[in-house]
Length: 206
Image 1 (cartoon, rainbow, N blue to C red):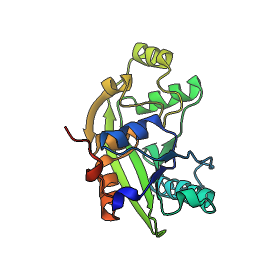
Image 2 (image 1 turned 30 degrees about the vertical axis):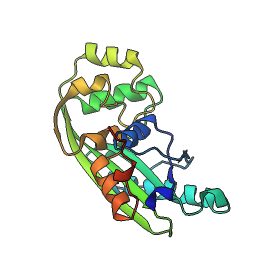
Image 3 (image 1 turned 135 degrees about the horizontal axis):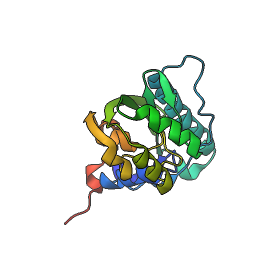
Image 4 (image 1 turned 60 degrees about the vertical axis):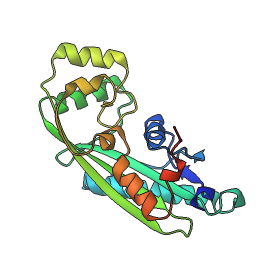
């Protein structure tokens, strides 16, 4: 019966789509939400991830409110925040921003927080915040220069994507790898199944 439900992903991230596909889930619709992602004054990185994931889900819900086609759908959103202490490293759009972030991350521990928000067909809101501690090795100027040249930092929180070349920078990690990629799979599937979305019936037969 749960197979009749549709899942809207309030994101346009190819990485989040790939992760859902890994769990056997194909979103029915992608709805990237254009919201202000700037942190509020003195806002903790964990609180920012929680707030933005909720705001994305709520924006998607408002966008489909009068569209009967999507009535009764699940809405899933996520927001990933990278921070050194309380200092939040935003999505790098320019090389100088990426350079600054990589110098800060070099040889240090940092935290990756992902807020996951699920809106159920009866409009209940469920949230989960997942955190992972990551330590980068000390990066040489040559490594930073070549990583910047790769362009893989562009548009990514903290100016890196662990699933790409920057995976070679990770000396140690405590917590969920998929959380660092952008969507903690264990917790996401737990949220979905706990609210009646039958993930496992969607798995392909061999």
